[in-house]
Structure formats: C-alpha cells, structure tokens
Amino acid sequence: MENKLKDNVDQISQHAKATAPLALRWIKLKAVEAVSKVITSVLHTVVSIILIFFTMIMASFSLAFYVGNLYDSIAAGFLAITAFYVVIIILYKLFLGGILKRIVMGSIINKFLK
Image 1 (cartoon, rainbow, N blue to C red):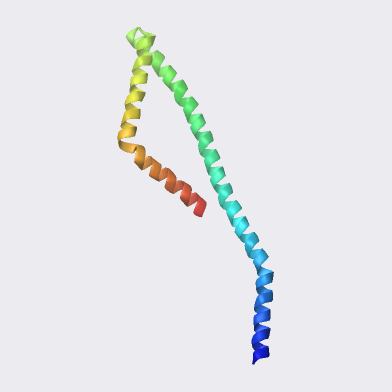
Image 2: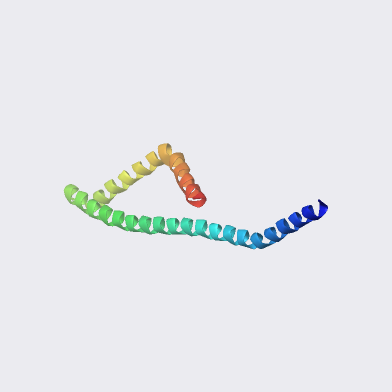
C-alpha cells in the first residue's frame, strides 16, 4: 500500500514538474495578449482622437470665418465660436465628467479582462 501511494505521489510530482513551465508560459502568453489588446485599443483611440481634433479645428475655422462674414467682423465670428465651445465645456464639466470617466474605465477594464 505504501509503495503504491509513493508511486502515485512520484507520478503526480513528475506531472507537476512537467506542466508547471507550460502553465507559466500560458499565463505569460495570456498576459501579453491582454496587454497587446489594450495597447492596440488605446493606439486606435488616440489616432481617432487626433484625426477628429484636426477635423474639428478646420471646421471651427471655417465656421468662424463664415459667422464673421455674417457679422462683418472676423473677430466676432471667432468670438462666437469660442463662446460656443466654452458653453460645451461648462456643460460637460457639470453633467458628463463623471459618467464619461466611468465608461472609459469600464471599457479599459473589459478590454484587459477579455
């Protein structure tokens, strides 16, 4: 009985020694996969934000010149567009700041855990 138990323990020990490096390698691969997904997602988001930013800048300039022509004052056009953005920023800070932060954090956590 003791010999059989000792053989079983030896077999389990050999199996654990054989599978431990594979399990460690699998964990590393899963970690690399999760990190690469997050980095890819962040990079995609950053590029999208940069493109949207430049598009918004060009649209804002165009709209400012157009409004300026309507008021016969380019400065008034730029002032009107600036005031519009200030109102948007104030509304964002008052109502959406915390909500957007939770959405972004949840999205990053979900990307990392998938």
